[in-house]
Length: 323
Image (cartoon, rainbow, N blue to C red):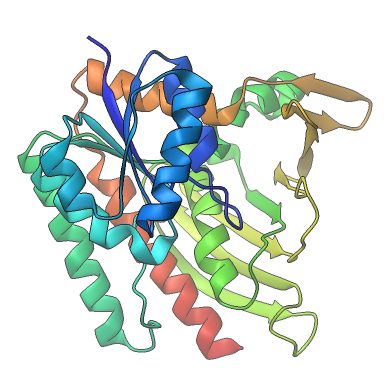
């Protein structure tokens, strides 16, 4: 039997991934059973589009709890804005649904200003993760960048090194958002790569700088990631842009690879000087990995989820105090 999937945040507004996530789940044999949007009208429009596109009998809702009471759902894909995640995570977990969630796991509507605010975020994060663990629910973030690493190593086999040999990791991203919002949008990408390369760790010596006093200008974040095999000097360059597709790149030990996207088919490749390699769609790989975790009854990766939020909070607060 195919999985019944509900898409929360099915529209493309700003930089939403809902339509693409729905497409991938359909491609992999799932049934798109419901959508939840901010209004009944927008949900109805999205549901009608999915019915026409994929032939699924997709129902529309403006409330997650009502949807879960009305429609059989095995998987909830949360693609709505980050500050709305919390209102969907709890009910979905209580209903026993597996959850595929855009990163970060969640973020409060109220700005995190103090250590008390940060502690409250972590208390709620731990509660959600433990709830999913008790109910044997797979909860995974849609972190796509780690699935580009096989392509990177194919282009640069000499950089396929053990963790102890990786001295530095740098990432360049171009968020649509600006100011502190781009930290919430972008830093989880960096953290997912560090976790993929090194496993769990701790961050220390965080420094940040801006190219201008204007909050919309470029932001440079540096810190060290201390892991079991050593310390990695880490840097993130954020340059807000409305350009589509957005420029992006990363480097291991200063060997940089740039992401290239061919539109309109959205074919993704990696480029180094003199070489270019088309790779599998990282979103497809991310969803496949999530479904594989359900099939194999994989244990919840509490470290990735909890440490990811803790590290994001550390960086967010450090940028706030140094700006």
